[in-house]
Image 1: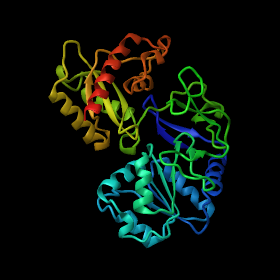
Image 2: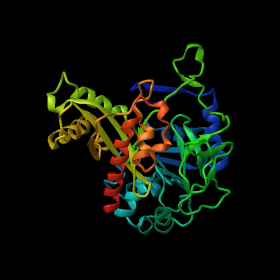
Image 3: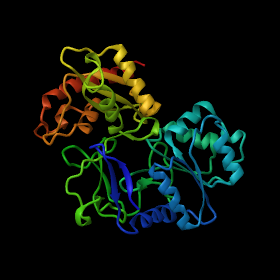
Image 4: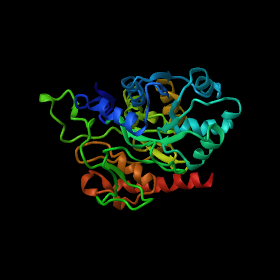
Length: 376
């Protein structure tokens, strides 16, 4: 089974896992760490295009009964909890964004539902804020295991998450998953201190580690792989390439007039709500002498909404003089995202960039964007 996601070069990239490795990995997590049993009714609110569908399907190997819901969970806020009672759901998988929205529009599910079968609630997609732990234990059930879990499309499983043998602490993931040598590293390659943000790194091999991308000559591994750049507003993941495709289609010089021509663009996610969510920021480079008009901003948002979805629409469109590129001609998204979210320019190695001098533009933009959020 391949795991497919959008790549940085706008082509779909299919990860080729090791034979049997993905199933072994998921069974380790669900059977040993989560203690799922054949009698469990295992539910996930997910699309079939998200890796959590694969994660749900792996419950069949344990003999679980599966329930999948793909649709709006809040048109009737009671609907998913009605399913818990009607179907006897024991394992309830969802996103942090859903729990956040539920806490605002349906404040006490346990008052109108039994929820007596519920054993576990899993939250993923974005960090689960500490107050939402209170909401789950006070307003849904005091007896569940609340597992904030984190993994990835590339491994189609977890790096850290739930464990029935350990306590749950408010605002924290329980532990590294069994056999996952996970650490957080600073930009200089040192292990982060407690409460210091860094890059997640898994130091040792594991069963579902991808052997490369498909197709590859000789089925070998790829020596240099540029990770897909993903935005995650409201826990809905999509690749920045989805926005670039719309820009190229609708705003290239041969298809639009001079004032609406977009020469280049850069999409990144800015952290909001104390790091529990993010919003999409779209930087655009226009023709020399042109200024970003309100009309152009409206058209950009309209085209993205129409050709993609409301979730893809950027919260902000900002004009810049230049877009940073690596020496090999790739957009510099991850370093810019760090700068927008407060990292110093010194955290970026300028020797890897073709035009590092333009990073100061994003430092200035980041300061303004963060000040705007703090002022709200």
